[in-house]
Image (cartoon, rainbow, N blue to C red):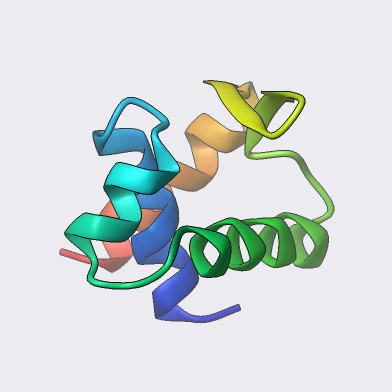
Length: 75
């Protein structure tokens, strides 16, 4: 778990779950953002986002809680 993963989750939420736009905003690659978010989900043992195929569809309830914590940490 690291701050980069937190920033990726935060930016994905800000960009309406568009990982390509989140990656552009953070000057990194979309596959890197996707991988980092999946790794964070694995570490936490929860799904932050629901997916349809490879696309993010919505933020889960546990994901909402994680996002609130991330917002506090990154202030």
